[in-house]
Image (cartoon, rainbow, N blue to C red; front, top):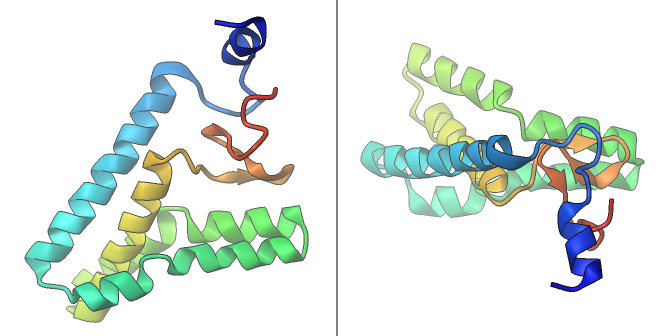
Length: 142
């Protein structure tokens, strides 16, 4: 291992970023959520065309970064938090609304795969600063 590689691998995580076993656990939770929602969606008999069409919809929240990082982080986090899709799923079950349930499952699957891949909730410092650590080109830099 070179000195540069060694320094990058031992550099402390940015303030507010989770590390070690907790980071692994959070990413595994994301993978579990993704897999669970895909299986549930399949058992539910949801349309895979609808799934494909809506799966990346939460990423439209990236557009808010065109305004500024603070607005971008708030809008991105709103679209990538569990709160809205869980509320939607609860509403879907309560009122027996199949489309509402389908949207909630797809949304949760999206959040799950994002978390499994290390795309966490964003800090206002910029898109690359997440609760799961740095992402993008500068991830190895402290």
